[in-house]
Length: 315
Image 1 (tube, rainbow, N blue to C red):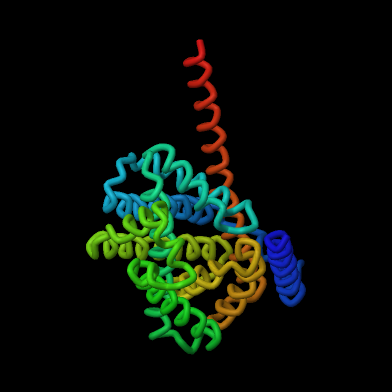
Image 2: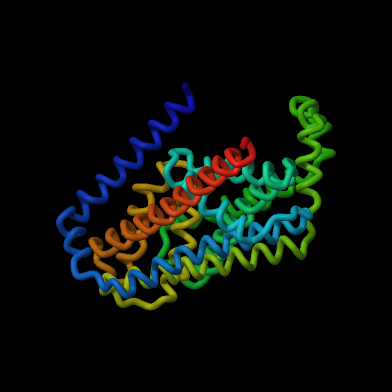
């Protein structure tokens, strides 16, 4: 019941924020901004967006290799698109992570390592976005509202501190409330997998995560060009990690409403008209839906292949 109520609150918040932004910007103005799109730049943005998922799958592969999980890169790319499908179309935004854990554990027969790999990928990706955002804020802190800067700084510290705590298995086992849980065999296997990462693999994954953030900034830049917006690409290097970090927080329905609000708040400060900033956000969301749809098709195709294989084996 509580979970349903939380999802309902996310939907209400998302739609409320989206309606508020549309009313303040003007629905007709936002629609007018979408007129006359340069589809050449839009195609490039679409390709870059898909490339971003392929890069993230490689980051996942780096982390899984550190755990000696044998799975092909092609399989991981497919699973990343499938996970993105569930993350996009489920209200939690984390359903795809559960699906990736399950599918990878079925494929590799290494359940603890599958769980650890997905969690580490999520944490490293968010940390890379936070660090790039903080780096950009050194040069453009006047362009980002102070509360947003505080949230990013706090989230960065929370990730670093939380990561350190996760690795302290001895500390877990001494705590009175969760010590019994921490001593269970399944939890010990998972914590052992988390401790298996070395500094080199984590650093490599972090650098890949930074590369993904740059590619995503490039996709946003191409969307802006498609709308006729001409501003320095450096603003996208600054703003896109900030947007990604804030929308990653589980406070709305997959960032809907929050994303549009922060696009308008940030980009209008550097000469972009509010309807154009709103249109940029909506196009990025459409690209996200397209990527999710690709993942859905791949998941359906894998299910069809599985049924066909079972039918052949039954003959």
